[in-house]
Image 1 (cartoon, rainbow, N blue to C red):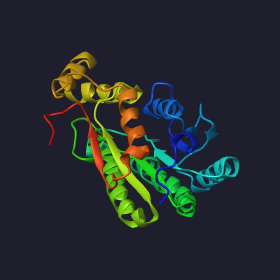
Image 2: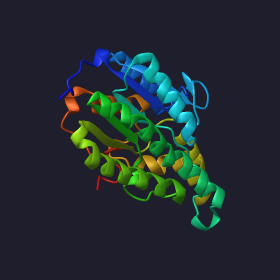
Image 3: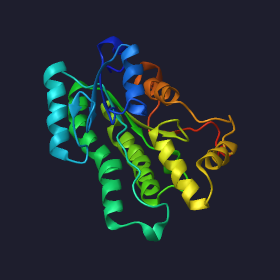
Length: 250
């Protein structure tokens, strides 16, 4: 067993880390602070320019990381989008295809490119950034997004079961409301659906959070970093809500 490799010698890939306000960028920063060598993937603003929905691009980028650093110990699948209407009948085929291409197939592509390297190393950890919407339906969220995040949670559990014998842990983090650019988009959708202002939408959402505020990206990143660490050596196959007790938990 090699799960207790010091964090200072570990290499991590974080996808969707290009936006400075996002969970991915905060996760990359947090992992670096904890001693990881971190390589970021995104469409722009990252170490590697990668469209995670394109398997060949992902494979080439992952192979480049292994060529440079010799290993991949942690993969954080954070890349994601929220596309289309919050109303089911208004979602186009393109909305469904694009959402699943990035949110679900992007995770598949990154895992398929990375897991063989982890198997050869005899260890690894994967954290998939799903959503509270991967555990329950949430008002004003596009159904395509919700369905894609449920798929990510299911994939997480399936991979955890299959690759546990290879000392590869696979978990999902399910954030609720997080103060990022995606929250601004979600609040705008909620306001439009309910015919209210964005300020009223924010107040409505906050009322459902037991802790009374949205999480920061750094707070989500801390949970992801824990799951990537040796301290989480016995945690796999979980989907952990990090939602401030939204609706009192469930």
